[in-house]
Figure 1 (cartoon, helix red, strand yellow):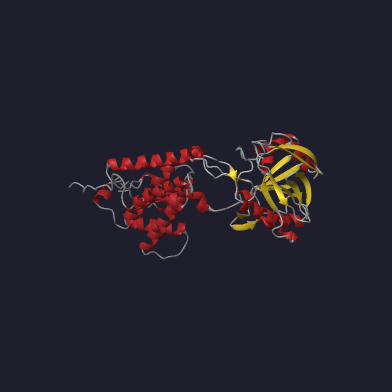
Figure 2 (spheres, one colour):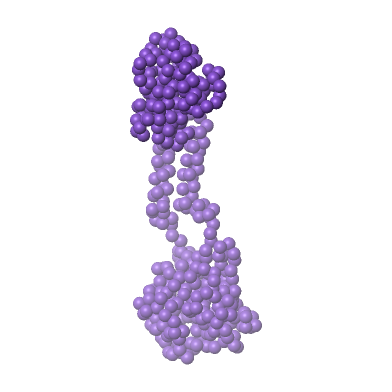
Length: 434
């Protein structure tokens, strides 16, 4: 009678399609992790102070490093921690750090209360104007928010104001003068303070208004970020101006804040896995989970051929040795097996349940002699105890002989087993089970 054929869940081509999708998924995940930055289109942003773009500040940081200063990037919210001068370059009014919203005014106030030096550079340009004119003047709202964050604690609300000065005859050269010295600058549409709070001190000014102002709490405000931008930092005396300004603090380290540039610490697993290219990894894991569910619910692929299981003391001892006994040596397992066989045989023969194992083996041998069988109990017990630590084959033979001896005395061997029973003169280890 032929066995019924089991129809697989999917056919051969279906399995090939699933494997192909799995390989493509793995390849896409690996490819996006390695080359994801090239696949995602870059959009203009003003959030990176260390960027290489025209309005980034990488040239400033590298110049300061070449002049012997350590430039540190800060993305934490302990603003009162760094004792070195901290620069807030074109900051936003708010930022989120680890799920909490922080305000620029709170950061400046924390540093002011700790008597730590702070420099704030006002925003000026809008990077999202479009491809035709990528850099246009920003609305006044970001400038006003930054001014309010710096000067609001002085009780002079709305006092500070700034505006752009149009270039006369296309000339962008200006001269700045004040307590820091005299510097030539080349800035298109110079942004200056038109109104300075009464308690503030002007450090540098132009004929059109102040450019560098110190608030009453010591916070220094620079009106025009073009003095520090990459595209403009090498012009005129811009580098000398910044070196003079920073040298007054007598510090060999400056800290540039990145929290208010959109780089606050945001520990969100959902956001990290939901963005490209990490979302492909999520899709890949969901596909694998679906395949695992399918494999666990129904058979996948052709059925395995039937496996012939053995039976008898050899298989029992193998299971005990490798599963129940956790890999114990064969000697204690065989010795325990022979002892349990003798205990069970002694009880089934109705003998008194007392005495040592040797005494019970002697009693079993007396019954065997009375029934005209070879007395093997004592021989089996001594052979199991004398077994070597690596005599695996000998152990199997002793275990089979104990099993056969028990079956013979209980009368459970048929004619076939009785005809093949060994003679009483043979060694107990040479007996074979039916």
